[in-house]
Amino acid sequence: MSEDCKGKIVVALGGNALQRKGGETTAEAQLEVVRQTCRHLARIEYSGYETCIVHGNGPQVGRILLASETAASVTPAMPFDVCGAMSQGYIGYHLQLAMKEALHGLGKGYIPVVTLITQVLVDAGDPGFTNPTKPIGKFYTEEEARALTVEKGYVMKEDAGRGWRRVVASPLPKKIVEAETIKRLWDSTILITCGGGGIPCILNEQGNYVGVDAVIDKDYAAELLAEEVDADVLMILTEVEKVCLNYGKPDQEEISAMTVEQALKYVEEGHFAPGSMLPKVMAGIKFANSGRHKKAIITSLDKAIEALEGRTGTTICAY
Image (cartoon, rainbow, N blue to C red; front, side, top):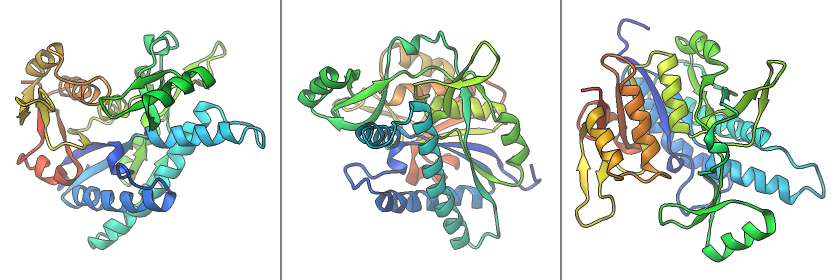
């Protein structure tokens, strides 16, 4: 790390940073959203942080899988892990293009931006495999969801009041397979890695990695990565400026800062929805507990710089 560096930061991007809610889902429309996103991310790098980007892939991998299954009569359908790798490639490509454009616009010299297709080891016995919870793909009405359950055997669940979505297994990440490569590239390169939480894999009897049908939560993967590279900040970007208690209710209350103890208390009281804010808070708790002076920040994309300066967002620290 250079002497004038403010610290290492791992940024986890929410779905709204890659695709406009209710907007078109064409590649062109998504790239334009990513361009807007990278203007904010470039400001983080420009302000003096060494930055690594982790992104989700729920809508994208769902569409890739749907397209592959729909075309199965013409060309063989791709397995889930391969679809995950495809999503890492094309989202990473968009982020590379847009990040380089944004840095150039700020007058920064040449900074390499590289996407690393990343595998993440999970436990074959993880309970997530028997209780699918991770939403992927588009939203459906309840009637459409019931029909898909019958026709295709999908597990469908209501997603935080926004509609019904297909859910798949979401095991916890145990090890980032390419961690050493990430560390070697860190000082010279802006990395886009652990896309979609990484490609979930297990070890077979021969000691080889084998992909499995699952999606790792990108917030948990970003937290593990932040520990691996000894980051100073884990920043989780989402749709809201601050974490709230009693979200969506008349007595909603924004939180500017939480200790780990306070955050765990709020979790136990059920303030955070499993499909949205809960994994973000839990990832923040784990990172804040990982070492002295570590902090997690949860905020919206457009408030990222202000949150780093302590002017907004929700910060989680050990004490």
